[in-house]
Length: 219
Image 1 (spheres, rainbow, N blue to C red):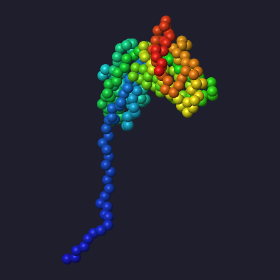
Image 2 (cartoon, rainbow, N blue to C red; image 1 turned 90 degrees about the horizontal axis):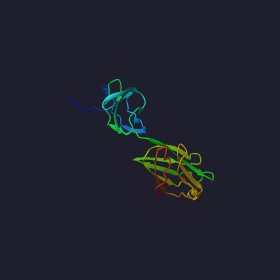
Image 3 (tube, rainbow, N blue to C red; image 1 turned 90 degrees about the vertical axis):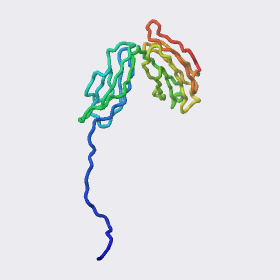
Image 4 (cartoon, rainbow, N blue to C red; image 1 turned 45 degrees about the horizontal axis):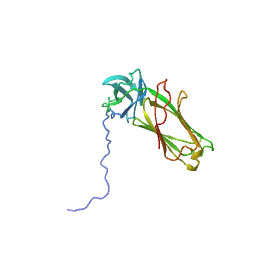
């Protein structure tokens, strides 16, 4: 009987495996007060989601949202509110997100204005960091980006820090005014006051009769 071996490649057949469709994953939700009676909700886009539903204390308050933010209005100042969100596609609805809570607070619009008397060199590449109540915002400064406004809760203790940029030797030409949107001055730092790493603190007060708030600490 002849014996031998088989070499080469033999194709038996081909086939395709289709994944079983499923509902989306639950979103990641954050909640933040935006004024005395409103909270804004935001979440990351979920792969495969066609829309989103929002719940407050387990009760549906918004459905078929196609964006990733939602504002809740007409709330009571000082009262905590908690929310969840789900993602939806044609297969079904996801599990609820982790609960996110926030408390509406009285807000003040605080305006930070930098001036540079030497063509903006002192601001080029510089940064300004503002921290309050667990929130931190960092702003990039330049010759054309030198003013911004933040809504900060009344009663907040604010820490602000200036860090030099591309031309630290020109910081002496930079001044800073911090005011409420109505024009009342919180602090004014003349040219020559700022330096790399310079920090100061102040307390925000939205009370109309007492608009000013002197800085408490310089360091």
